[in-house]
Length: 378
Ligand SMILES: *Cc1c(COP(=O)(O)O)cnc(C)c1O
Image (cartoon, rainbow, N blue to C red; front, side):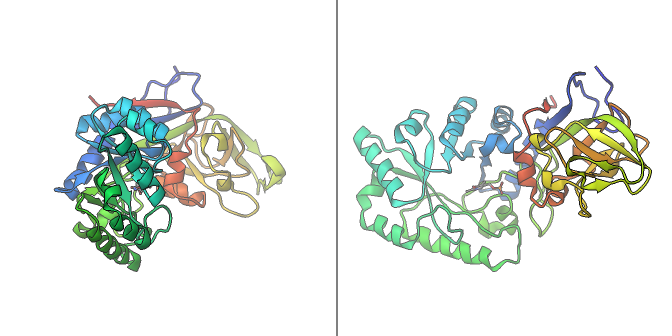
């Protein structure tokens, strides 16, 4: 084992590991607990789609279950099957809706139904089996993705037998602009949601995700559905969510070299040394989720890594397996040092902004090559 260098957490990282992602399950639990307390008496569910935003559903779902989370949202039917295995007693909603009724029923997952065809299919399946199976209804309120609009709701109301064949577990909708507390769409969507749900049979209601729950009580209804905030994300622009970071990512410095004035670095020679620079080659690239857009090339500033707590600009093109960073004034940069990609000096939001993206995409694109360490804290 090579001693972790400088400010890298003291962890048991195998000598062969080129990169490491550290996930703090205790903090994930604490974040969910804190959001729960914020929204009580509304229920706090957890969105664990996309492998718990790339952090590992196999670890995250049991941790949240142990903390008391009873309702999970996933995107796909396959994710629902995994979630069912990991949380045998939980309620599991499938956001992508109904592709295969028999499959969802076999794993006791609930589809989020978002058009008449889906409602009819689930309703028919229930009638055939003689079971009144639960589902959620997704109502359109302004996002114009998946959702039942007024005309579809009117058709449902006109055919009460269809809705009557299933159990309406939840009516929900999704906010488009909740990160901005001053955006007029927030209120407009809430009012449209309230009006639509009032036309339907009584059921629990849900409108808010991570940012929506920060908009206040009026947005909590019976259940909130945060994802990103549970994973330490701070996307809300109106204040800090009551959560802390849960993950860090590091990659090894493989080599440090002196690059004299005029010498290029990286593919397509898009960056040349302005004179006497020290350049570190680091073992993570776009295959690991370092965005190629974070290249510091052709006069455009790129992303950063941090070594010994000091920020170092990425210079030259990000390649598949490697990035190069200017470490001229960073004595801690030495062969086998750890370069922080995401962590105390580089938040998810900062890394997202450097890449012309958002922290959500940074998280969900973390590659499979990182050695992963899960801290349970107990
Ligand atoms: C992804 C998603 C969420 C969770 O959103 P966050 O911003 O990560 O909290 C909630 N509801 C729906 C419908 C989603 O697609």
